[in-house]
Amino acid sequence: MKVGLLALQGDFAAHGKALARLGCGGVEVRRPDQLSGLGGLIVPGGESTALLKLIAEGGMDRAIQEFGERGGAIFGTCAGLIILAREVRHPAQPGLGLIDVGVERNAYGRQRESFEQAISVPALGNDPFPGIFIRAPKIVRLGPEVEALATVGSDCVLARQGRILVATFHPELTPDGRLHARFLEMVRAGA
Amino acid sequence: METGTLRLKTGLAEMLKGGVIMDVTTAEQAKISEDAGAVAVMALERVPADIRAGGGVARMADPKKIVEIMEMVSIPVMAKVRIGHFVEAQILEALGVDYIDESEVLTPADEHNHIDKFAFKVPFVCGARDLGEALRRIGEGAALIRTKGEAGSGNVAEAVRHMRLVLRSMKELTILSPEELMTKAKEMGAPYALVKLVAETGSLPVPNFAAGGIATPADAALMMQLGAESVFVGSGIFKSEDPAPRARAIVQATTHYREPDVLARVSEGLGEPMPGIDLTRLEEKELLQIRGV
Image 1 (cartoon, chains in turn brown, orange):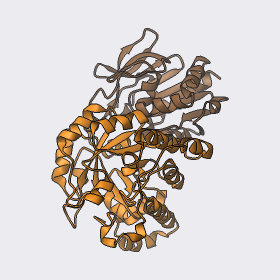
Image 2 (tube, chains in turn yellow, purple):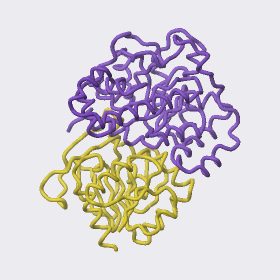
Image 3 (cartoon, rainbow over the protein chains, first blue to last red):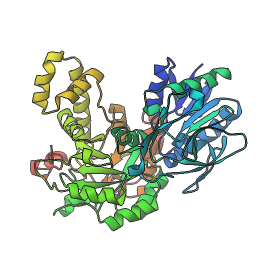
């Protein structure tokens, strides 16, 4: 089962390396037709304002929505989460509405407030997961169908709704492959 | 909880990959850049072409102007300090700037030493003309390397030279035997541990972007095809005839850098680019790239 990497901007290459360590070759996706035949798609970290413009230019926004509606599994990290969310604020911008959450951008502050913190993710076992939060967003509203998989303080940082998985941090920048492995299980489960 | 780690510093540069970072001198230009799809803006007093034309000492921008730019846009804001001027860097860190460029475009404050960049929580980008220079800057704590090129020239030739040289030198290191690496490190004037790391991995331990003379969508795509992971555009946008369409076109070209049909379409009808300089007509002392090696 092939997994696409949205390769318009951002750290898609880091996601590709994370998949490769699990024995899965990622396919770079820059045009809507490149989504056909894929079981999953990763929307990487990057700058969400730039990514939004790039996905709108070539009709990729609609193509990703259709991919999700057809049952494709999607994993969004940081900016990827912002792209997939239903509402986005600070400042307000459109989202694809594929996961029923509200997101606040740059919610912890600027780069000097970026932080690393170990996160407890019960679904991945007892070992904490290395959380890398870079100018990170916060999930400020969780829809009734959305399951919170991890929290930092009172904030949900990892969530899932059906075949959509989102994180406010960057698992792709760590050697810990457990979240990518979990996403690949989601991809296979839909095949 | 930890802040200011190297992983967070290089991590922000990872987020900027495949994007365009644009030089701006006003909040209005910053907004135009963000609307065009820039991944970050670089706040400065004058663009390099004007610094070159105006002469005198070029310094960090007025903090008031930098704050206006930070308030205007939601993308990361970078700003430049003079080489070795760690107090300008302290000021930018206090303002909350997201990345500091210790830049040869400004007049160096220290003829011999660069800033100890490990002393800061905010990440630094530095220019380099060759691999030794890149590894010296990384040894001092830089989290991102860019080619120096020749800023404000509108001529991409020097950026091409610097990118090719860095990449070729990395390939050369990978074929040396372990006992040759110390001598190579000595010749390059680079830290042995970093020379050894590059010999093992074939790449820099931090992202590698292009800068210096990029003025057209084709220039941006050229640097990306050569191996740059993102591009900085300095004078190329706001010294051109019609900045907004050119900014959008350079963003598209950087994303679709391997698709000539897209490059042809976005390059159409952009008006006059910035006037360029024939670099062979510049004297050695007029070059910005020889500062702070």
